[in-house]
Length: 265
Ligand code: MN
Image (cartoon, rainbow, N blue to C red):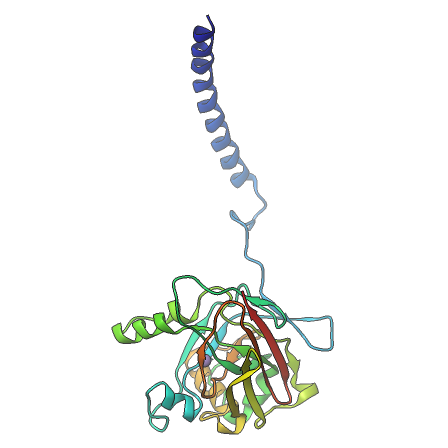
């Protein structure tokens, strides 16, 4: 008897489930049709942003441009000639920004994740073909950032002529401090840039050693891309890049801008 009853129950459930599925499809179709004009059909991403130092306001982050090989010593340590290259650019993903004081999650796949401490310029006024003489007027402020890099994957990409995204644009790969308005700190063009790992000095340089200055970088990048308010530009890293491990504390800074502390988690 019990067995028979169970069977009957199952038979009844099958068509009921199918009907429920049909009903759900119908409802979501109706919901999409009756949604307000312009409503998103999937959850819209949150707009990334950074705090602005000394205020409660935020700096909205639109895109992250990075300059490669912009300090002579670092260019040599990566096996290239610093005197023979025009600046070149790559991009990082601005979602999931890690703020100074936070944790950088060790990314998957790689076994060789490197730190690169950098001065970051935050664009306040966009434009194309910006002359270097006018470039500083396009900057809202500055921050200190880490261009975290899966060096092994970047190396494979270089060898095979593939894009760098797997090495550079993974999640949380751009830890950053708050943005400091140029109105408060000026436009730094000299001063120490440094990074310690667990209290030991790893990277050390001076903004004076930048091969391409911040105005020159803006002039170059704005020929290739139309810059927009909210864009960040990572300006390159001094020599001494190297691997990090889970549990490491990265502490670095740029004189006259800020100090950044990130734990590797
Ligand atoms: Mn870099």
